[in-house]
Length: 311
Image (cartoon, rainbow, N blue to C red; front, side):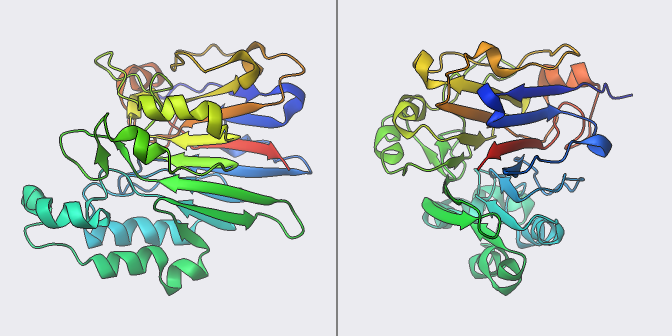
């Protein structure tokens, strides 16, 4: 039986509230003046219940290898989710979306349907076509987008990028030497969506490696999003609130929580300039999977992470 825990993180004055572990049947509604962001990642064509909210954010690996059939299954699920706006990016498993790379490498995945290249136009239609627009889906690939989550509400901005440090030549990979130039193009926004994590922030693997991006970690002091969502490293699912008054982030990894809610990671009342870091990978893996006794995508230990932010 899966273990049920309750973990809530709060910034000073509750401007940001993060529900990391919760009872899905008893999740508190957002208070007046807050926008609810529901964060998922690394869903890999699996379907599972997702809490309602104002905005759904998906940080990539929509599929296993990006066949048309996999995209159809994932997008049909996303279309039907109740969120008023759904913002998504690709990840390294969404192979055909990295067009030039895919033309040269699709044959390497011939065992999973890529001996003949998948129909890129059909995939883009699923992500950006009429049905996607009707469902208020926004697909971002190295671009910024602004939106109002509520009528008369504030204007939010988000920048989305599918890239992550090179890993066995999958899609959207870059070398350490290429990282600074690529990251320098990221635009300052309220919300940053990347597929890969920054180095030393919720990026520890089962082997004890830290494969996050050093260039991205270095850029955060300048970018300072209110919310940085990523995935990619499934076993590092977790969340952390960092105050920039303390300087750069340092090494932050997930851990085995107690049953007591955590509040603000010992932030001071005056720490108003904060970033909520979320690794929202929903694929159960690693020590966290063992601790929560789960194999369920989006289940205990790997739930969608709910972030309420004061407008």
